[in-house]
Image (cartoon, rainbow, N blue to C red; front, side):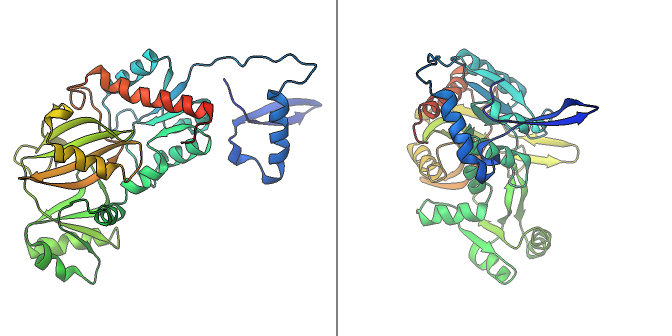
Amino acid sequence: MHAPLIRTTSERDHGRWHLRGVRIWSAADIARGHRAFVAEAAAAYITPNNNTPAREAPRVHPSIAILYTEGEPDPPSNPRALENFRRAAEALGMRAKFITKNDGERLAEFDALFIRDTTWISHYTYQFARRATADGVVVIDDPDSLLRCNNKVFLDELLTRYSIPTPKTLMVHRDNVDQIIPILGLPCILKQPDSAFSLGVAKIHSREALSAALASLFAKSELVIAQEWLPTEFDWRVGILDRRPLYVCKYMMAPGHWQVIKRETNRKLEGSTIALSIGEAPEVVVKTALKAANLIGDGLYGVDLKQVRDECYVIEVNDNPNVDAGNEDGILKDALYREVMGVFLRRIHERRRGVPA
């Protein structure tokens, strides 16, 4: 194991010292008053003097940790896709290791972290992203992307500021509820600000249903997002990585439902996924998705859009988008996984050379 900083805890018992604990440290854990000493010690260790022949540092294969949760109900990648990512990493000369939420102390062992777990801000996934970033580890998706994509109020303001088309939207608070129907009409869509996977999203058909839904949503948040309803047979999803389109899919609506996912008691129904080549998708769809994703960063994003005739509207930008074997990889196949791991490998090498992120 390679670790630049380790803290050990020892205890003296009956005249003998015993090791009680070992913990990997990051630079952020060093007390401010000790940092100059640590910098001197590190410089003395890696800089040969006149009496010590220089040693070439051992070349270590880059390593990547893939964070996931076994048995997660809505995973961003199914087991076959996770294995494809691992195989692609190893084919490029990287060591790949699956980790879980219990492995936070091990992040400094790796050169990169790939989050293939459902992300939330009040969640260990965000803490993993922050800690890995502080340790100098390449992370997808980075903590800034998680913050931006998980806040739909921020997203709406950002897209509006840069004139990216979205459905007609109203930020609803308790004092402007009476504006929803005059501005958006019925039916309309209500969303809680951190909704995901079709959870926390409701289609409203009547004033009575609107009052009931708002009461439930206001119990969780001071703001609710209301949008006009744009009926379409499918949603576009454009996967963006490193500011370039990676894949394009049509997500068909679940049978007899207005969303891609229909949740019923003890079961979940999903519409089919149709993968297309980038060139097969309408140019307006790909360009609009790129423009929206590039406002967030250079990570891996899934941009959801609706197309109504010649107009294209961004519904949301998702961090940690789905990459499932048999769905999003329908066109690129194994090349999709190599593309993702290739970006990690390039960023690891750039980080080692000191190229600014």
